[in-house]
Length: 411
Image 1 (cartoon, rainbow, N blue to C red):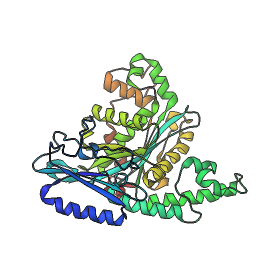
Image 2: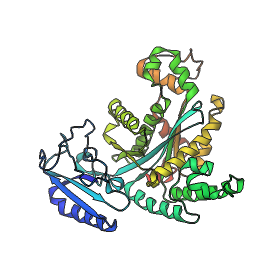
Image 3: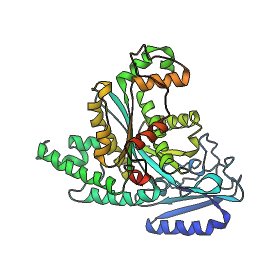
Image 4: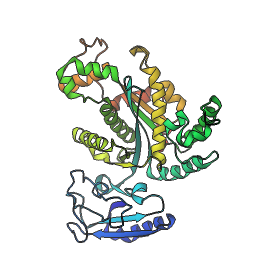
């Protein structure tokens, strides 16, 4: 499904664009539905609290069911002047257009069109969920993702062919990577050939200048802070990944605003049994962060066996996993992630939560001072994450857009 708002005078051009899209996708059947504001003729209402933009107010049932209907809601503020809601429901042989484009255009400030960035993300932990929880992902604009999807599929299908990438299957040589075993047994040689396949996929990420980003929460520090005071336990959720994910949302949005102010960003995760949790955390974050909320344009959940962006996010999360295994065991004064940033060629930033960071957050937000109790002596006025990032780029000589590692994929 595609959802967007357009001026009535531009409707003809938009339909032409959609027609080209349908032709290229070899569509089997299609349904166009249009509605004027406040009209419910042929369109059911869905008064969802998440209906904050045209892309967020369209819902549907299983695309395999032919009796599906498109539902739309007239949401206050979406309809300045003469505007139409245009909803296009399309079926292709492989995937729906909803899974390819959820938005063509997004309303920007002062009537300008804002470029939509899309961030795909994945989670990762150490084996026992005792050391760290990671939210890692990749960001690029819409046009870059289109070419990336094709190049990724080409790399997957090059011999030895696989249909999709999952880090767990690559690591264990099962699933799509079972073919790399020798006589059905795991071997170093087989793992080496599997690594070569993965490296070719990583090269696609580099070639298309897709931006990698991640946030890791050190679980021992996280639990120690929560146990240190009832107010800390109330402020930080019991699941450390909640902090990692919400930080990922902020860091990725801040990266977009740093490189291309005025643009907007939407998020995509795997359609797993945690999808509802991710949606809840996303909208909780928007509610608590009104300064950055206007540029956050929704979250969706897709099949990670079909979407290159989700598979690339899986690779980034796995790379961060390997780095945090070493990082989590080091003394605080020795923890550095610059080597990963420089060596990957596409990871823009890796942030982490430790005792110091969490103590400072508690002090700044609710006035709770745990520095002395937690044995953290290095303290001072907390700078915003964006200010810290700005100073890091200045210090490393990467402030110019053209030189920021991987930032070309954001612009």
